[in-house]
Length: 218
Image (cartoon, rainbow, N blue to C red; front, side, top):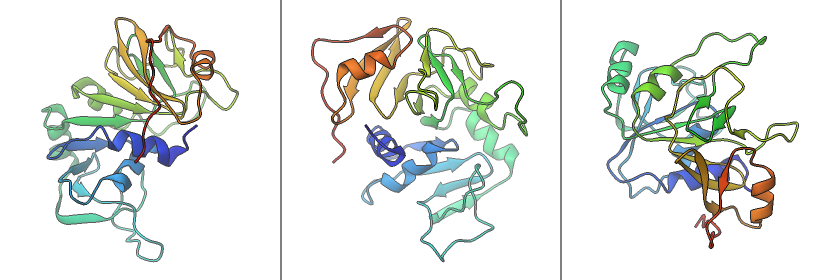
């Protein structure tokens, strides 16, 4: 199965030259590390930067240069900084071609829960609500199961929803799955992961085609 960097590397293959891409906190922030130098991609962070680069090397961090998850980042040549109003105008105006988000649960109808666990302290929902309401192309990067081994790909979400019917594709440590017609459709399986492994870890309806290729991370 994939580690977090493997998930990010697979998602990087989804990005096309010239796109503007918003990366959520968690696994999505790793995607910027796996974009070929030959590609022209602009990463946007909702705290007000367009042109994020990969994480800095140890010792080269700038404490004033952070992403929405408060991690230190680098800026590509030509990067720009702006206030939150401008940042969310970009998001709400659908000027971003792809949004990559983490999630605690995803349902087979495309619902996503990624901002709150009841009873646990949270500082706020951040920009998640705006992102899922405005983005036309959302990919979720997540572990297939939680720490207890229970599926995070469900028939319906049990946690408070962030968005309804908005997720198009999910990339986990086990597989790539598309969401359509109320079901998870298996697209690819992670190296050395069997279809049986994926089926047993998926609580929502899973559609398995006759041939499921193993994903390539080259």
